[in-house]
Figure 1 (cartoon, helix red, strand yellow):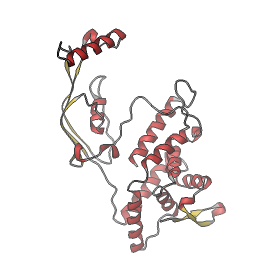
Figure 2: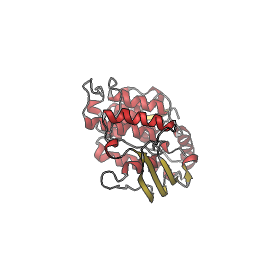
Figure 3: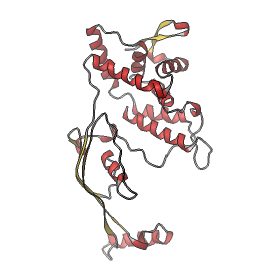
Amino acid sequence: MRKGILMGAAASVEEVDIQGLGMQERKNLIERLVRTAEEDNERFLLKLRDRMERVGIDNPTIEVHFENLNIDAEAYVGNRGVPAMTNFFSNKVMDVLSAMHIVSSGKRPVSILHDISGVIRPDRMSLLLGPPGSGKTSLLLALAGKLDSNLKVSGRVTYNGHDMDGFVPQRTSTYIGQHDVHVGKMTVRETLAFFARCQGVGTRYDMLTELSRREKESNIKPDPDVDVYMKAISVEGQESVVTDYILKILGLEICADTMVGDSMIRGISGGQKKHVTTGICNLQLN
């Protein structure tokens, strides 16, 4: 588990310590696996899947069901709902008086979603369309388990038949919002590496141990590059491998060592920030 076969210079082959992979070795590994993200990434992912399926290990899949989902809120309507400074303070005062049962809050019930049902099946891409204000964002937040606690929710959302109380949707789904919130003084590489370290290796080590055991029993030799990659992302201290992979497939290599930036610090473009957010969400699901 700690050793791997890595192609060196001039097509030489050498055994390496997975925990001792250097920056150039990681770069060469990712370059061989995914030379062109648009063309090679799918081929690489198929190699990962095929390696597991050859020994009878199925990739976990998630099927999401939502039944009779209702989301309701109480909000100020009309002129009271306009985001103005005077309304902000007057609404705060009304909230306090309402909490003391002195006056009614003046809020009106608003139905965001009403009796929505559907299924999101694995290995498929679903497109959600609707006019502004139709509840698209609220539906996605409900499925990701990130709805505001002040909203009134009824109905049922299940992941593989498990209710939200018995399942952690944040480990299998994520919501990419409209606003990209990052630490402006960190570079793109540092941002992704930080999230990779926070996530840890999870269950990947146990899965790879079982995979290696079955391959030995079946006398199957894995692809050397795929084997090194899977071992590297399954041991502590080699989070840079998955970071380099994310940088490659999202086209962020060109700005990897540039600060993300914010309103006060010049950094990467808005599109690149969205790619960084997507990369972070990808790391959360690994």
